[in-house]
Amino acid sequence: MVEFDVVELPPADHPAEGETAPDFTRPLVNDEYWEDTSLSEVVGPEPTLLVFHPMDGSFPATYLYNEIRDRGWETTATVVGVSISTPYEHKSFIAARGIDSRLFSDPGNGVAEAYGIAHELDGMAGIEEPRPAVFLLAADRTIEYVWVASEWPEFPDYDEIQRQLARTE
Image (cartoon, rainbow, N blue to C red; front, side, top):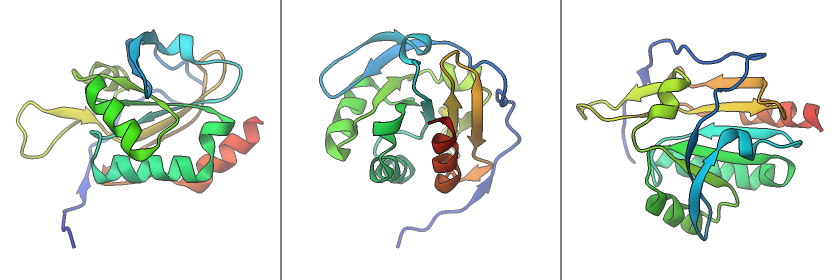
């Protein structure tokens, strides 16, 4: 059994429900290619789940996307992820996990900083990644629901996200 410490995270200064999600442009990766794309280009008439996750291949990222796939969210919403992993790592992660979502590559962690959810990795000087977070966005990028981790590791309340998605149908 892998052992790890649960670490309480400091408060995050993230956008709240009712606010407009900050726009950004980064490489957006699918199973075939990637290209610079803005969040505003991705958000459409259906709900959009913007999912910030740890590095590809980490157990939290793997569990998160397994849950998204198993609950079928990719068929009821546009699901896009954001992490510090490179486009090459995203492409491999998508193939290995059978992910139907596209993933933004943000190696400099600037998007997480803009969202107020940057997280310094313990024992790795100068290395940050986004803390796990989920933002449910309307067509105009208004945040309808937000969950941000308050400890490490922590997973969202998947049932609550399911209820929020059902409310938007």
